[in-house]
Length: 383
Image (cartoon, rainbow, N blue to C red):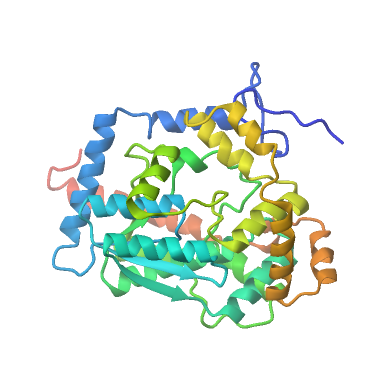
């Protein structure tokens, strides 16, 4: 067994094949974080908040005379819950959407209910067809690809854009958080979360139930939503201050929100996937990436992160309970589950990917040139 080498600054190590180190033992993920942070969250606070205020104004202006001026997906986790609180403070009127994929735990349901009641939001719960969703999740598991969250991510984004079109809403609020999630190696997830070709190919090979009700979003859909309808997904967290400990305190004190034992553990499946399947099948402990982001953003020390990593991802007894529950809910036998767990991991790319994105990008660039030289330049607005 090869010796594991860890970064001298964060807790990422050679369990990701994409890591490299400088002469001081600092990894490439730390250097990448610093470069991006310098152009985002570490910019002058006055500049960041000016941009934030301008974005809020744009959302309000676009939403005039509409029931809602934006859409917000709410999972009950830290980021989406705080996003809901910030939106309320700024006087926004979001349509709050929750996605029930069959794996919610009771605590998440309670937190969501507390938030919408305290903030007086309208809540739209989208319940996915379980038989279709189960079949797609199982297809990904049988395919032995690493990112079993792709079906949920496709569902969330596709539904948000679909609802935005239905309600004529131009802004979708995103809970993406650079400070807490940047240092995630691309060999630990599938970066092309919205690749419909990859999803369909995996399901065609390993699935059995036709996906008739499952909302999907491919490159052509994204082009129509973004370029033709002008729907934008925007984030606040690269513009405002964000400290996890302070945010959790606010959520607890102001919304009676109850914390979870781990990041994204508002979903029972995500808890089991990150704390059991990823660790045992792929040798990946996602906590290393999440904790490393917090180290780089100055929110915890490396010593605190190492102390957290010394513990199991979550209690072993609960892992076994979750395992029994997941196997039964998926309709597998324990032998079938273990057989798939022991199969060799397969890269997502093996099953094919969308190629149209290259064409879309070329069209976008050509249209920009046409706009500049055929429209702006004759008017003296572009030189």
